[in-house]
Image (cartoon, rainbow over all chains, first blue to last red; front, side, top):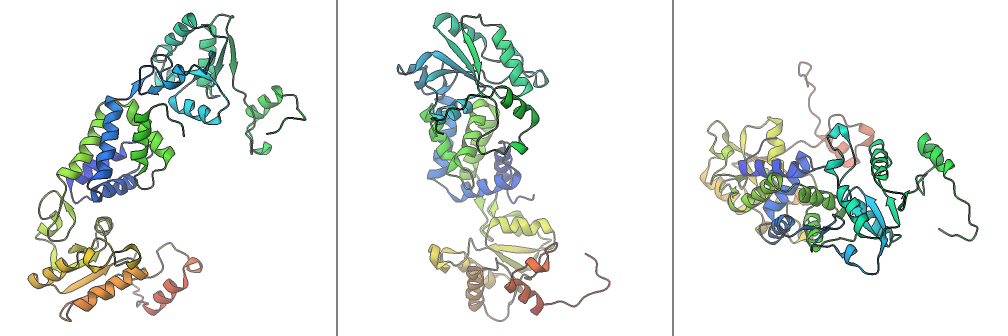
Length: 204
Length: 204
């Protein structure tokens, strides 16, 4: 791509360093910003700066927050005896959107992946064990991706936790709206193993 | 979408105000930036700031540039007697990438579109007429999108220019790699009207 200006070229490069933004998308975004001198650009810069200056990480669950302790951990209505262990902030948002969980969270910050150089020490496992000592916790719900790395992480964490805390994983099975013939064998096999009693009075 | 932090929410809003960035993409970008405290974010902010502070618009052709006059207008090797009139900076880049044009450009900044409130006064038409008075120009190549608005703009500009300057439009026809049966009637009709002599010795 030939640029008429070095400034333009640098902006396109910085923009295309973001995930899923290619050179062409970056160019469109940069030209849009270059045309919009003023409010929109100022707001974007302020917002990106605020990410650095104002965004805090909850000391309890490691979620992003505006305060030392996030709103979910602070909420007295939530069941502190249930901790849902997830990989990332995105997972918390996804589960919150389902409105099916009223406990609290703990964000690991990833899964154990030797190939990517992520060992247990890189994850927020110590602080989880610390929480279990301080808080009275009945159940850990492991809402971790059903991958090799995810399963390894679940196994590793479960080994560190004594039997007074029950550990569960989210159900694996065929998605709603999914067709059986397209489900992979592992998923289908698991969904048969962990079949649930059909409840005639239950509705979707 | 539920956000755990107002800062996060504001950043997602500012990001999703950009074209073709939805809420989910914006969230992914913002979380990526939030995780990358440091270099990447700093570079992006600097680059966006530079768009405001350093990016100039060429006084001659209205292209983005680092100097008062852009590199293309400054290039003595380029044929100043041919001006290619385009809508936007992106079009200049697209034509430059073909390496088929060695003249100079004039960016109108859009096309006449009464529906969007863009009249001739909003476009860089006056400065084009000014250029024609000062420079000796033989040909104006109208590389404008073949839409109703584009055709209107070509017609409007052509009426303002005296007959000493020849005016051409880029060829309209079926794209390379395109199949005839999928071409629309107007394009196909035009491509038959403006058929060109087949040259046996010409290669693609």
